[in-house]
Amino acid sequence: MKRIPRWGKITLVAVVCLIAVSAIWLSRPVQFRPVLMMTPLHGDMQLHYTDELMQDEAFVAGLIEVLDGYAIRYRWSDQTLMVPRSVMSDRDLAWNFTTKAGGTEAWFRIHGKDQKDWSPL
Image 1 (cartoon, rainbow, N blue to C red):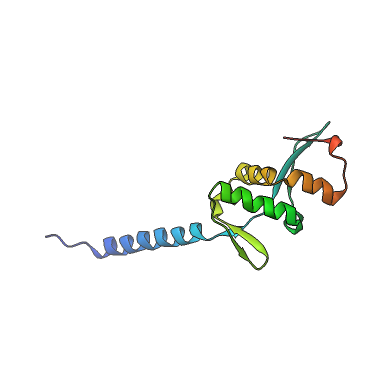
Image 2 (cartoon, helix red, strand yellow; image 1 turned 135 degrees about the horizontal axis):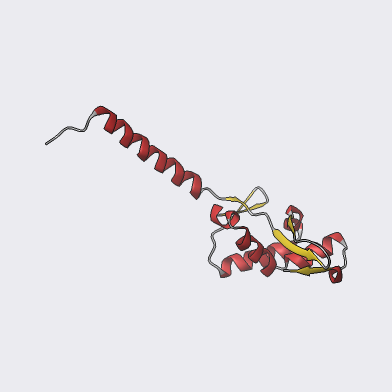
């Protein structure tokens, strides 16, 4: 049987380590940040990351119900909702969860703005 050269062993170990580190990094949960995409009636689309929605108990309860409905794993850590990295790396998915949890209405309620001036996407 032929022996693997030394540089081959080093390369193999480096590739295995790189895959292991990537798998660990990708599996770590991240903080959920609500995403709102709204368009003023006469303007361009605006993207809002609104951490303040996480202070609204009705929104958080709705968000947990949405995450349960989609079988998304989550956990509470130091008063923050931690979700898989894949949820927050897909902005449309985070927006979908925020919208279904009542985020648009909560944002207008918190900021005291008139929802008639905005058109949710």
